[in-house]
Length: 163
Image (cartoon, rainbow, N blue to C red):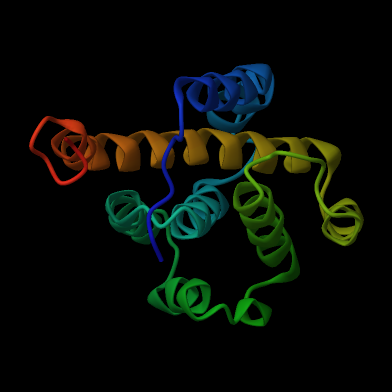
């Protein structure tokens, strides 16, 4: 899967605006422990994988292990065998991954939102949304920065895409 990146400066602004508007939920997440470290890192690994950000996935897998996520749980995410997770963790991962997959362009699909509402508290849904947005922004920023030298070479005179 090709890493996802920002398409334009307007794309950066839109994604950043989404993160900023969820600032209170991010504060609840990180300052008030809305999600424990185990669940938070499960979500960050899942979102990094959706965005195909290898560097972020690598780092967050290490952080997840330190936070108590087992090797089996990480394999579960990798294989997509989410039924092996507990209902709460599965719902957090599915909700956040679905939001990241659609790049927050529209509301969450009704079936995903219904399951989230049946399993999670409203503040947990807000935390998962905020975390998915922040992680997606970070993933896209890293992938864009990594792709930038090749883009510049292609657009330079005499480059692969130049004249």
